[in-house]
Structures are given as structure tokens and as C-alpha cells.
Image 1 (cartoon, rainbow, N blue to C red):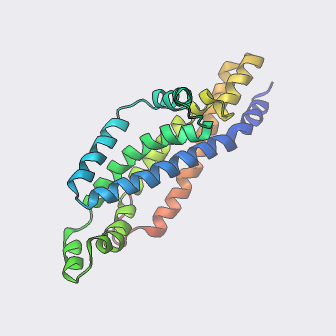
Image 2 (cartoon, rainbow, N blue to C red):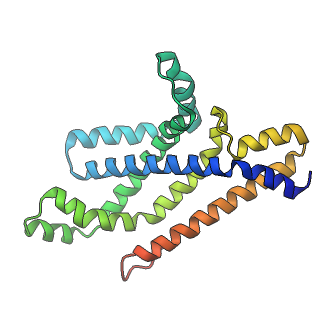
Length: 217
């Protein structure tokens, strides 16, 4: 089997890799943004609970959590589909890291703007929604890109729960062709191409929404 044939065979799993990455990224983004926004409201009970969440989920290995969800929950009567298991493991771990990215980006917002908005009579939720969130999302783009890259790199764990993404195709192809070096070299090339395409798209979005006068990293 030629190297081109290997690439074409592995390409069958690209759609699953992209789906897993997008689902886990969306889960991490939504949960992380919600946690960071709630923490910004400065309610002591919420802050403590969110700090505990981020502390725990940043310390649990993704693969261990994935096995707990996919193989452990059925023992308690909860059957979890493979894609949902990835969202509840990789997605939630990513949300803990993204919550910290957003927290740092929130701290970059000029306090004078917040004070001015409050002096105009805006409520805390209005300040958060109209003043802090738009700027925070722009400041957090580099951190989000870094975390989404990590999600892409962790997406091969999906093959352990039966999702036929690129790595699953590679293990099958290696067992039938015994061309391990060529197969996994092709895997690396495909992941690199996916990463570069995603990065190019993010850079376009970043330039479109960057804050005037601030050069993106």
C-alpha cells in the first residue's frame, strides 16, 4: 500500500475527529464561559463551588475520566453514548481550563470602564453583558486557541470508546498492513493539517474582532 493510499484510507476518520473536537470544544466553551461569568458576580458560595470544580477537573486525567463515564456509569444504570462520554470527560476538563482563561481575560478589562458603567446606573448583569464580556472574549482568543489545540490532541482518546476517528482507522490499518511507521506518520500529517486549517480560521476571526489599538498575540 502506497503512502497516498494510506492517507486516503485514514481520511475516512477525519469527519469523526472534527466532530469530536467541535463537540468537546463547544462543551468546554459553554461551560467554561458560564462558570467564569458566574464567578465574576462575586458571590462567595458560587466562587467557592467554581474554584472546587476547576481544581478537580484540571487534576483528573482525561482518559481516566472518560473510562469512568463510559464504562463506570452503566454500572449505575446510566448508558452513555460514545460522543456524549467524550463531551462529559474531555469537554468538562477543557471547561475547567477555559474558565481560568476567561477569568484572566476578565481581569484585563479596565476597572475604570466598569466603574463608569456602574456610575451611569447599569446593573451588575448589564455591566457584565455589555462591558466585560465583549472585551473579555477578545482578550481570551490566544488562550482559547491553545485550549482548542489541546482538545484536538486529546481527541484520539475517542477510539477507546469505539468512535472510528483517525486513530481508530490507523490501528485497524496497521494490523492489516504492518506498515506502522507509514501509517502513524500519515496520522501526524493529517492532525497537523487539521490544526493549521483551524488556526487559520481563528486568526481570521481574531483580526475581524480585535480591539482597535491592540495588536493580537
